[in-house]
Length: 380
Image (cartoon, rainbow, N blue to C red; front, side, top):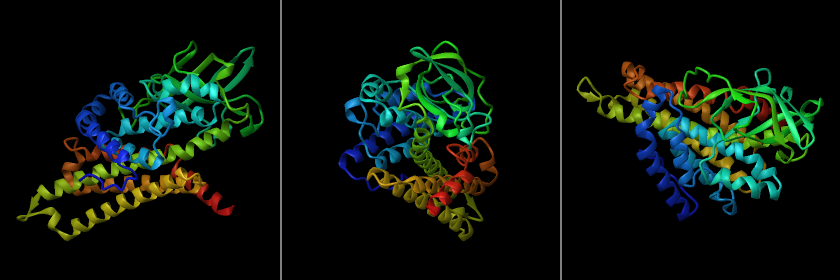
């Protein structure tokens, strides 16, 4: 059954109705086949762009929807519930737009933000490296100023949309001063010297491209520096706070889809002359799954409302990411159990949901890193 939502405005209600229609009619029918074929959903991202969904939290003057995070995240949840690769891709795109929208100059925003949030352009977030995942301050990709350009060399790892994105929010080293020597750039997605390696062969999210991104003497115009030199790590960590809320919403969408599938199966599957949902042991399992989904949703919405009010939300975002992704892993695993042998086959989507849930505990900061963030905030 659809999630019950308490939305702040009638405009938000109309928006969610549109999102549900797109998710139901344009995304869900194609998800299983596309994931099986490892097909990148570029046409679906273009549809989201034409529908005004690529820039929901950004200002209307740039072509965005100017929606609070409380609303944007619930729209994202609906999309992820229908097709996880599209939900994660939308979350990554919104996070990739964050640096320009939040830290860019007026001239930079006027020049680049409209094409990013209102059209069919897709973003990527280029922070991680093979030796600098959780320890972002250890990255080695370097940008050297040469006249009116920065020349970039290095390799990024685990980049969503690598090779398919039209732009990347790139973090690169401009000085040998640890985390203080990292800067942020809005890098064009298709430029000489920028290439992507073969996509990683992943357990889940097989429709989403994840690959290394290689910079070999890539020239980036000087005016594409976002903020000042040395601001990169600050910008990256700020973006991750919001990005973690996006992943939290995706996780809840996936868990909701798994719960819905498990309940529907339990109502129609009979054993010993009764629907299996009538057996208390299974009924209690479904009840625990429902409690986990609704508790996780409340957790990310609480953090989103703090963000919308301009309050600090780093700790709350980390808690939401931890709680929501752990819930998704538990609920999808239990959904497989409810379906029994059928749940272990590809005839039903719950085995895919379970595979997709695992990565949620890893990217945008592992859940062990979230515990470190929460503990650090408690010590303040």
